[in-house]
Amino acid sequence: MRAEPTGKQLLASPNALFCAAVLMFVLAIIPGMPWLPFLSFAVVLAFVGWRISQRTPGEADDAELKKLETALFSTKEEPLGWDNIGYVDPLSVSIGFQLAQMIDKSQGAPLTRRLEGLRRSMSNASGFLLPAVSVRDDLGLKPARTCIPTS
Image 1 (spheres, one colour):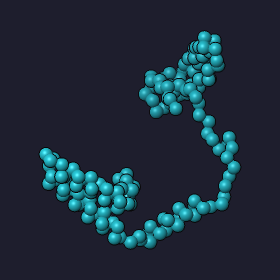
Image 2 (cartoon, rainbow, N blue to C red; image 1 turned 120 degrees about the vertical axis):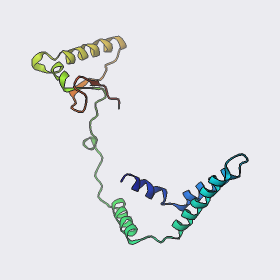
Image 3 (cartoon, rainbow, N blue to C red; image 1 turned 60 degrees about the vertical axis):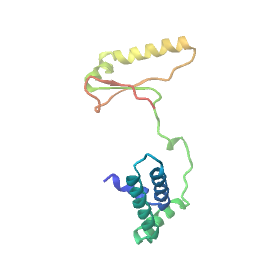
Image 4 (cartoon, rainbow, N blue to C red; image 1 turned 90 degrees about the horizontal axis):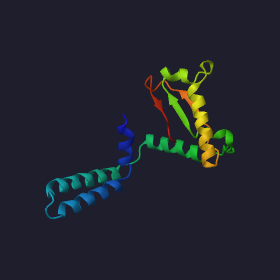
């Protein structure tokens, strides 16, 4: 399923296949290299490139091309603003569901308080304000694991 788009991309341009055929031919004529596999692969690549260059674009290709053209040349432009950009936390901590009690406000949120204290002391020591740390529970993690994603 996933190989179909890759195959279309590799076989879209016969020039790429011709370049690969030339490279295989050069490897075949280097003394000491196994010439038969490289030469046969060069012939196969050149033949496939030639067949693709002889192919005429089908109706499906034309329909796909028209869709792309209409999408590219549409006049509907929205002004770019801060609402179009999603918010990304500069620093966050994800925790497993067993550790969720560490951020529960009804239980005192010890992890959140520790991280805030650490942020405060590091900001005082470094001389600039560090960004706030967001703490979230993540069901994708193992129950007692933590994760600090970097973006």
